Length: 293
Length: 302
Image (cartoon, rainbow over all chains, first blue to last red; front, side, top):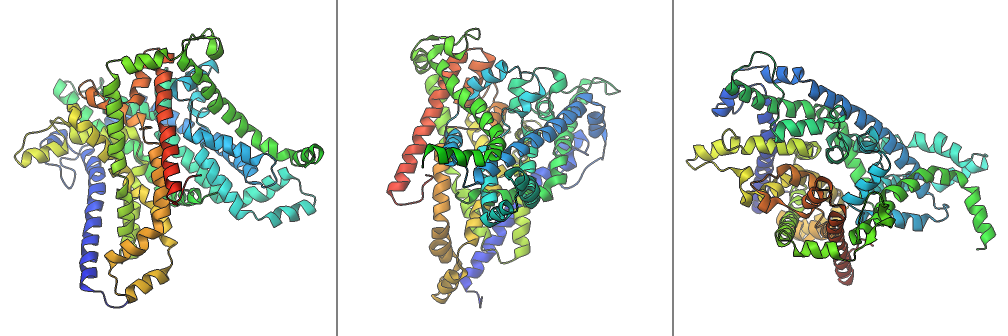
């Protein structure tokens, strides 16, 4: 574009300023948690921590390392996230494929019944009673099965298949004597790695971050996922720092504060590592979902 | 189509039904059985008798909810919080329109990368951070307030602050993420429209208003309809985590009340009735808004 007018230059200047401010508002809280997790609690409380860690200490992370409940929660969450995303993805991809086929008799009424559940649900209480009657209470399955398929993901998958698998491909394969199963597993699946990645990540993230299911379905301590442990530490102020040489109440309290900052970092680590993939594939998922099908 | 050819078409694709079967079973069990179970809202549910076997009591539980001294407070909190949240609906739209006008692609991408990130933080961690930052004694925000010469505010315990904390932490977490869909819609606007507008002497602000905004309006309307249709389904998770006995007068919403009455208090039927009340309000809202949008010849969900 040619020369910019005065008003556009004003606009651009303000626009850059606005987004710079936005960046600060988003980054600074996260950065502050990071530097605080390494800082002396006295320095944090005294307001001396602003731009870098003050009186560096690893005590917070030492406390987290010594806390076996955090690690058990971490392990449980890893199990739920991997098992959950495996099951959800298998169901969503197979179901989504079948629903993408125009020659599926009864496709519209089935789709309608599925879409309806997006707008009207039985709700918390009947679902809880159902899960209880199925014998899932206080088992791994309560974490994974009741929310296994999301309608939204099913739509994304269906749209993907409708857009990427041309009818001619199916016809040609059928001519060669290929049946539906063989076509799905040997031709469609290899072509759909991007959508499989989207669905795996969507489910892994939502499992990792969810605490509602654990709150209502799980009782035993050994089964609790990380988010429940985090809730105890961050929101309910329960920290299990009984051991070691931090004796006075004041020190205990300070250490509990330090652990809070550290635990935010530790819990977000998997997301941080996955972030480049998450950004890429989640955006892709949203784009697919936004196509009206 | 005769029955016979229909049957042949089903049988010919039997493998597809095998692939679909787990999904169908899932929706039947985990969505339609709970809907069937909603009848306990009109019954006195006894676990031993099951959904169907329990005794009908009509609208007793609804009546009890309407008569309870909590009713107006809870309804007010739910509606107020929902509308407050809906009021922030334009923020991602405005951000997307502005981001689209940034000249440097590098800066644009950097802003996106950063603003998407909070979306992946769990609700528990988000609320944990709020507790840390808003703490009256040690929190960053209160230290700032004190440095400015004002008195520290006990945000978490103050009922009047609950709704703002709830809504604005949501904006912080999701506004960037909410831009994606509008940014996608913006890419489908023809560049010629902008070029023509430039020739006509329109500055950026005018082009946003006359070219970009009309271009994404259908997307905006669809999302607005969906938002209104979900108006009253506020997140249970965040409200419950931010709730305490001190701010309860402002933070008790239908979702948290259903949980407390039903699962913590064991009053299944009463809680199911309240949940149903909420779902129906939502459902009606959705239909009304969608109809209005259709009448006005705008986009609609169906």
